[in-house]
Image (cartoon, rainbow, N blue to C red; front, side):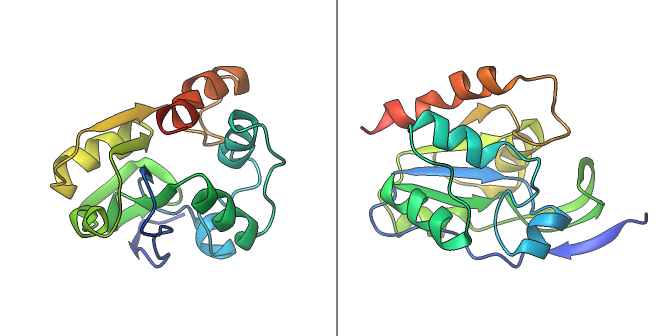
Length: 163
């Protein structure tokens, strides 16, 4: 596998009522293939959110969008473009941040969460947004050091923030 230059092609998910923003780093090859965030079948993001909100796990892109908007969650990524090897955030070079500030201006977002240490790093280094970010462990299949139950516990703050 060789390093590729990737440009972010997925639009952010949000509406004027969004209160929470969840940011990853960059869509994985599987997410780009499926056309939506956290698209790898082994990624635990959607299962964790469903468990946190005590709802069935959304399956389709439309169900996932509706789930987010119903819970006032916006989704996007910290990076607009980068060089990367496969889906490995550790290999990212030449990161260019997304314009998070413009998204914040169109919403009621009061909290920004990042899924993983690299998303946290790139948010701080590349996004120049006025809100601090709150770290959540990555739900990636590569992060098996964190159990599903621990992820669920860590992600409960999403439900508790604005209920």
